[in-house]
Image (cartoon, rainbow, N blue to C red; front, side):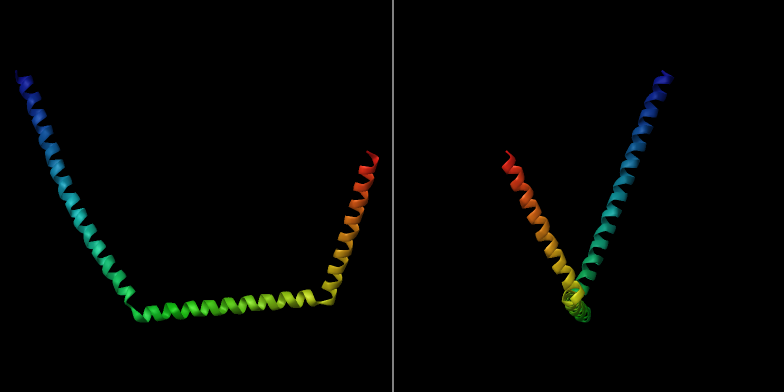
Length: 120
């Protein structure tokens, strides 16, 4: 009987510990939820503050214009340099040679096809 009493007592102690753990967990979850709500509130206020910061908006707009201007200048520079490159006499000569060689290779290919088809 003493053994049964001890077993029952152990079961009650275990249930009490689980209950205490559950209560502790509930308190921790409530604390966590409260902290999370506070953090979300702070983040929302900061986002609202940033959204209404006219000085920051002006800086961002100015920065965007600078980036756009720099991109346009860069594209124009690259375009100008590309045009200059293709207008150089040595480059034109190379292009003409490449065209001539392409025509030559194509003509040889056509001749080879004619011979191949005529043999059949």
